[in-house]
Length: 501
Image (cartoon, rainbow, N blue to C red; front, side, top):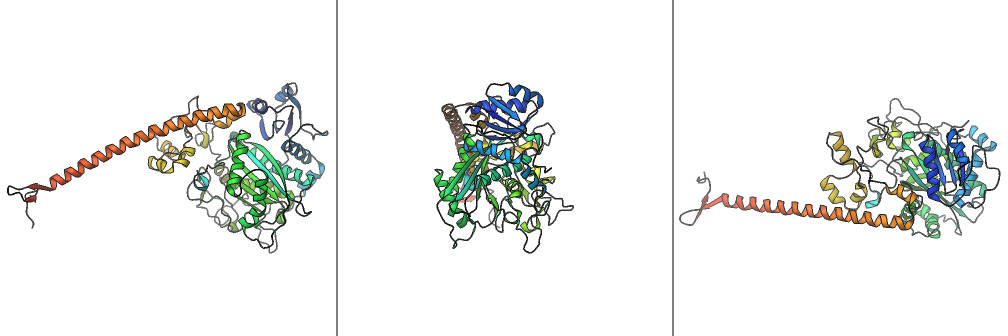
């Protein structure tokens, strides 16, 4: 059976709109050794549920059912995301889906097999993802990086962009297929590192456009913007990448997650069938020669880029010396230079990982204490220095603030930041249990605290600047007074008493 179809998954159906209650159910599952992998709205959870917890859940008020089989009846009052989550679950439990995965085309083939006329690799020429020379703490000139590492909860916005023409439209079956493939691929990814406690929460929107493709357009941006901008406007967002960022930030807040990104599926012409650039993935439904039955692996490959993993296949131009991801792990499995080279999702159509990919995702536990490095209390400051430094970058450069500086200090044996206190609660956790009004008051308080922090820091810097200025003036005056001494005749003579030689 395909490894993307785990046999120990269950679907949990809840009754109401109470999002905090769905998180309480999740906490009950995970505190007893299970894992909630997918979340659709407040009513649909998918994951692994320990047997003893399952028995308790079935009698819990608000829990409709817990089952490993398909849902044979229509579930009322579901949102679009919840309905598609259930439809995807049912599809993945079907015989036809299992047969399609058993006969998966090009299973195990390298993304760039090199055959003339063969399928193209994901990530077309000219598309650079994650080989920045420094960590991308703030993408796009000061905006927050909403996917620095894959630990904790992630909001995934799936936007299915359909046209009215038959060859551009998505049927209900194709929509369910998209969600099922994403469910399968991200489900595999989420279960690769238990310490990461990964949960994907979904916002799913279907947009129907009344526009025709423009045959005169070429290039990534012109082709994408032709359909993406009208789609984002229809959803109530501005055009350009700013609208996509606003959308991702919005679902991240509404779903109460730590991170977020968007995945656009379309049948409109694109420059390349699959590519990623934070905070979004673009994927054409036909998936080039790989076909829709490989969307699970291609989408998961692109999600690797979203969280810091580089391409490893030779035609990507990869280099073993390039450092990638939050932890700056070398691309040591680049096909052009690795010895030995091993198959990996970032290099081939396979559900497998080389030793470097988990570290690029942030999955490293250096001190083996059960806490992964990016969120280990030894390394993580209680104040969000990343967000602060994205707004005041010069200050943080001067003072050496930020996660990288903190980790460097710890590695050198210095305590550069105190461990988080019991009062340091991530905002994404508060969003799960507080109303919008309560969150607004919390945010106001945090803004005031941050303003006070900056004000105190500004005073310290001004005091330091005044002290430096005073010392500079003292030394300048001293240098001027010792350079010459007045003679009895009122003329100047060298302070050493020596004349010129």
